[in-house]
Length: 285
Ligand code: AMP
Image (cartoon, protein in one colour):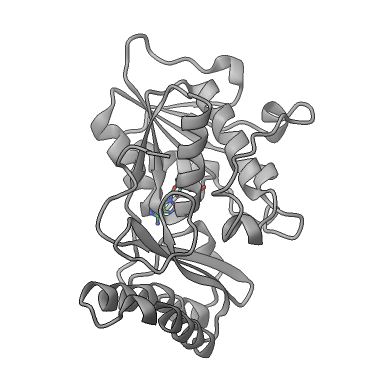
């Protein structure tokens, strides 16, 4: 497996179908599942590891974000990755960067809580697409809003790449895997699965008809209360449609339940998509 740090040194094998998994490193099984899927569907698998400064807010965890290239490289090699692109920030941003701003879907939830975050994400993803020149890129539904931001950017800017949005990989107790789970204390780690449990309870209620559409606002506020009682500081818990992530009361449209909450100093997000795999169907605007 190759590790490339300079943009000018990146080269794909001629004629190969290239699958690409952009990441910030600190790998867990969620990352590896994206790489395995890319491995199944392509001749050559590229992974980028770049803790992108432009997507972190001033008071966020850029400095303490876990970095361990040696361990990550071993894990990537173990699932058959062919090449890692791991640039320094100065290689990616030699001067003040041109920014990509995706409208609408970026306005709410993570976009509202983390101003500028999605400009940083869209910009680095487009740069990485232009450097790696893959046929298909793989993203995790764990970061649902990020998936929709990337989808909208690719559509609006006619970026020649296919996108695959892959299901969230979870720990045995249901906690969505995340590099940030490493920040949790032992006590917080025990509480953390509550986040997904609340989502799944609401999902079940909607699916079996015990929660009627008009009862959804009350259900969401009860969900928030139960998370607060468990020790979370809730940022949002909402039912949203799947284009711009606007709040909806209609779970029959392609929709998802989304949540973000802090446990101590660690901010966790999770979601469940209602009615199966709607994200990978073509974008209809
Ligand atoms: P990150 O390194 O956190 O930027 O994540 C890199 C990619 O892995 C993104 O597309 C994430 O959505 C995806 N990812 C992170 N956690 C998970 C998970 N638990 N299951 C599936 N994909 C994930």
